Length: 237
Image (cartoon, rainbow, N blue to C red; front, side):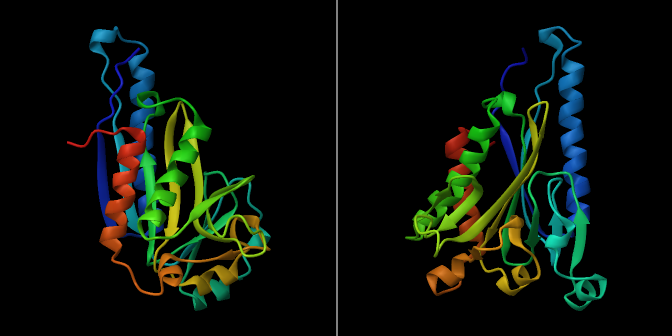
C-alpha cells in the first residue's frame, strides 16, 4: 500500500466562475484517481503518493442541482435566471439544489481519504465540525440535525432551525470532490428562488446576519482552514 501523504495544499481562487472551477476540480480529481490506479500496477517502492488539495473560492450567482435533486426545486425559469444574473448547472455531487454567490465561502477538498481515513460519513462530519468550530470562534452555537447534512443554527428547535452551511460531495476510489458552502455575507434573497437542498420548511442564514456585523472574509477562511488542518491532522508545507 502506498504510504499515507497528509501534506495538503490550500488554494484560494477568489471570485471564480462556477464552471471553470468545476472543470478545475475534475482535472485535479482525475489526476489523483489515475495515480491511484497506476500505483496498483507498480511495486511499492515505485509508487507515487497521491496529493491533497483544498480549494477555497467564491462564485458569481449560480444554482447547482445534485444527482438526487429535483429540477422543480429551482423556482426560476430561464428569463428569471437572466433577470437575477444567475447561472444554473446540473452536476455530479450528491444532494439536491443549492445556491452559490459572492460572500459565501466555498470549500472544495480534492483529497485522497486513503491518506487520512476511509470513512465517508466521518469525512462529512469533519467538514461540518470545521464550520461548527468556526462558528464557535465567533460565539455562535452551530450543530447538526439528524438526517440533514450541513450545519445549522438553533439546531435543537426545529421551528427556529436555519441552515448556515450546505454540503454535497462526490467520492470515488476514496478521492473526494465538491464540498461545502458557508454563508458568511451571502445575499440570502437568492435562496428564495429555490427549495434549498430540497427542504421547504427551514430557513437559511449567514454569519453576518447572526453576528449583526460584517466579519472579515479572510479571517473566516483562515479559521476554517485551521480547523480542517487540525481535524484531519493535515501537514502544511
